Amino acid sequence: MSKPIDGVGLAALGIGSVLVFAGMKGYSVLAVVQNLVTGKPIATGVSMTNPLTTPKGVAATDTPPVATPAGGGMSRDSLTQAWNHLNAVNGG
Image 1: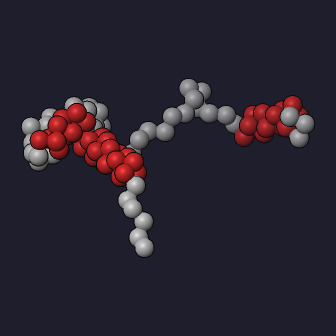
Image 2: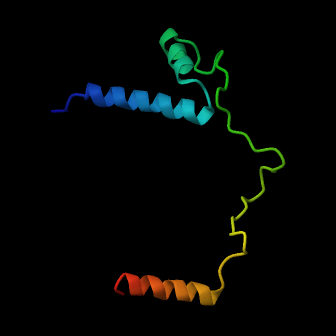
Image 3: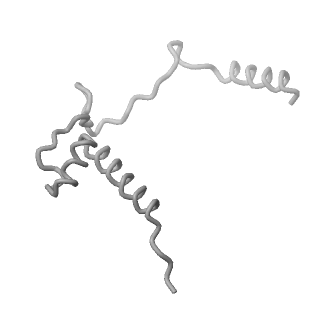
């Protein structure tokens, strides 16, 4: 005998699907829900409230910059000294 479908689980799946869809497309969640309830296509009359854009001056294919300290980082000797100090403080 088959088990009945859990209504709460089905509702959670539906709500989660709407949230994920609206978030990925940048649409307003309320506008998407309104279109679903009224039977309109989801993207009809829906503006992008939070579009994902590339910042000015950065090409879409550029790799993100790697942040380094203002001094250019730590030397190998200073890293070794810091590591040894941490080990001594922590009982290692």
